Length: 217
View 1 (tube, one colour):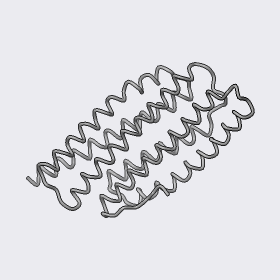
View 2: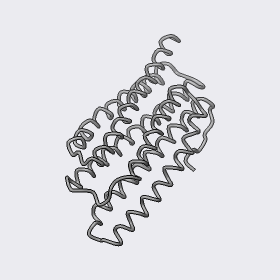
View 3: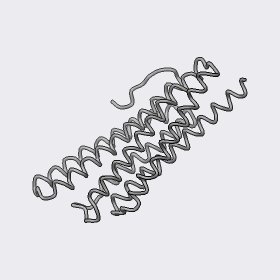
View 4: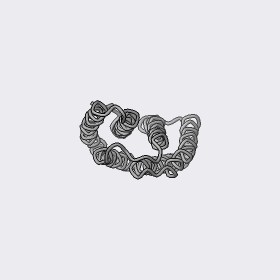
């Protein structure tokens, strides 16, 4: 039974990483869609979200099966409990990628009110956080997980910078308010994805050390 249990735990980790890779791609593509006004890509991101949702359901079922049939204790139980939370964070990140894709469609094929410079830079930071979070999970690397907090502070700085800039544009020219609000929402969604990355980092720390740390201060 121990061999079977170890095999299933390995399979669980593999499936979570596969789901994470799908979310990683969705986030990259949704920023590309917005920046390049690629509406067909936005539609693809929305359609592909069901694949991410199916992964979540499959992994959740595996976690439940492990708890019900293997009666795990200590670190193995922590790993399974944290897996529930990690896939929930990943699913929400996928939803936020879809939300940004929907914003691309709502803005339509018209030019953006300003060149996107800081927003893609902010998104690149979040994408790097996603990569770091998945690597920390794969290797159960506590220090790598903790490093997410510093990057998240940089994301928050970008968020304030972009928020103030767009609000200033709207104040100066109310005719851009509609698109400006969409871009404000996009910035908020990207910032939230960063928060979910820190949530994954917190679960890595809990899996490895059995303690709770707040990386999103």
